[in-house]
Length: 335
Ligand SMILES: [Zn+2]
Image (cartoon, rainbow, N blue to C red; front, side, top):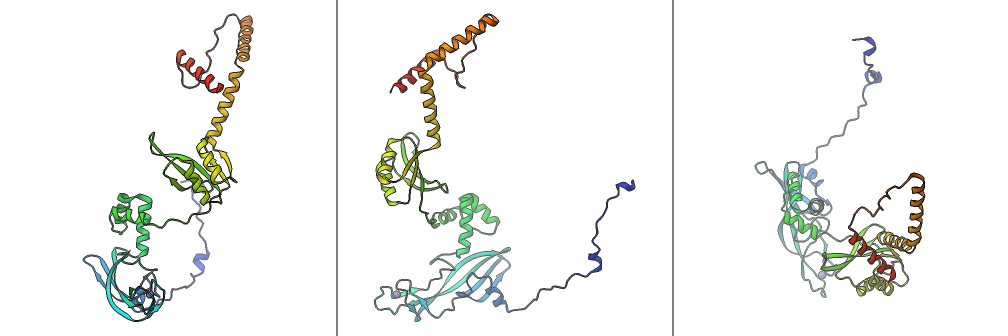
């Protein structure tokens, strides 16, 4: 090999001369229960009392209790300390590597000592851990819901199975349906248009926030009254974009008389096309005279030439079809 082709290796000398800094992690050996307590979602609410690892089924089971001595009644919010009874809930949690995790969660029932409270006995709530009567933790439910929102029931369940989140498509769809509705913002610019329940047969009205392009509401009918009622409940709307429908114009005028009505882009271009078409139609004799004069001038210079066919758009039609189109245009512009 030619010496000029030898690669030049850049080796930092400092790596050979200076030793690496000795930054070691301070390893500690806490008890196993103290260690496991770091993996429950709320260490102030829950306490790990024991664990069991089943290698055959690859399942880790934790015994979890609630150490709080006083809890609030969910009805009157009075602090209660008298325990009525205890029972065990089985709750699934996020997997740890190849192991599925479940809790044997020991919860208590309390007496409510508030005389005016209709709830005399209640079960303690764990709002940061799991919903009442739920069979899975909140964080597991959030992961499953994310799979359902992204992929739907069938595909979400398949991905969940690969990730160790065993569930069914029906459960994913139920979690998606139970997802809390995001807080609606006060719309300022609103888009109003029709949408089809069934094309050609039944139409409703769709309302879109034009600032974030999110659907705000679906009205069951294409009705001026419904639009006016919706706008009276949302007085922050100052600009409404709509089609050329007189029905929507009437509803907007009644529901938000202060709002500015603007036409959407599609109908704006459509208006422009029709205006240009009407203008050219009115000037048709002059255009024909100009075309004849041009053809006469070309004939005098180069002899008889065939006039090029007039461009009639991408969709060619027969002479009878052209006459029908011209008759329709004349009728439309005369109206
Ligand atoms: Zn109460």
